[in-house]
Length: 441
Ligand code: DSN
Image (cartoon, rainbow, N blue to C red; front, side):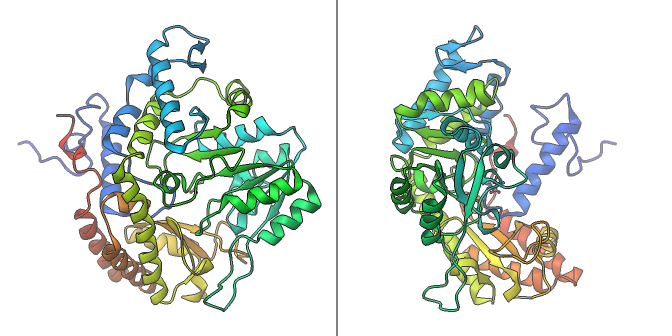
């Protein structure tokens, strides 16, 4: 008697057609596809790429070595690859209105490291955002190589205030200006990894000009919001702009750098041969697909909806007693300070119970968090992925209710299981990869 395929078996896997010879990997891919389809994806740095991006990323281009740049390679056989990378560069330039684009960085961290390498000498001073106020590891964290090569000085956000019309916890531009004057940095970095407000490049430019510093804008998080017109563009304002392609931009995992023609040579040399070897041309093709997708009217509507959904989620959570860092959001993410809801509840415990309830997010420090980055007092929530799946403000209100129930009922397994069941039902109505389940055809 033939047994019906069970969940996660090679036979049941939509990937079995592609991975027939490797049932173990086929099973794991199927399980991850199921996890992504049946749980809520609220990690602010994640998204669901289009099937076209997936196809380009899983293509024969992975076979090719192409050290160098288009028409200046160190290996033969790159005529097609040159066209791929030229296309990706042209699309990135056109999407963001940049004079030059380097699409080879394997990730945002590599893009930042390459930008520093292009602009600085070892030991130079850089002014960037504090990690515990929302900056990124590559903005000079003691744990990052960046802090060992360059001297970082950090600015932060203003203190929280009780006044609802001016809640604080926004970038302290007085502090940025004072530190810039005192420390004479060679470079100022704007941008963050956990900050829910628009980061206007203009005041940073003014401060940089006043002290003769260069300006780098790390738009890893809002790149898709910039592309879709929901946030002001730093291109042409900052000297160098770094980005990731997989967050709000909805492309493959990877990074890119934009700059003026004057810095093109230095930036290219910093990426290769400075820091990387052979470029990942399959990822570059997938980036090209994503850059084209981000230039459509649908993507503009998407970018606006991501912000609208985030505001709806924030408003619903605030109504339920959760304090939002800076009082709300202008982008795709929210920072929730859990102490207002329950002083005993840590970010770590909240992340764990939400995971069990099928709500995927990450714990995060809040400004001046008394708890360690491993424990934290906050949660970071994002709306980029579930907006791609088609959810709107009504679903966001429902998600806020599910978060409340899971956190309040965290010691009651039946309640957590009941939330899990409702999450599964909600996700079933918004499948991110309905087409994928049909298999390779
Ligand atoms: N890990 C990314 C994020 O989640 O924001 C940044 O590197």
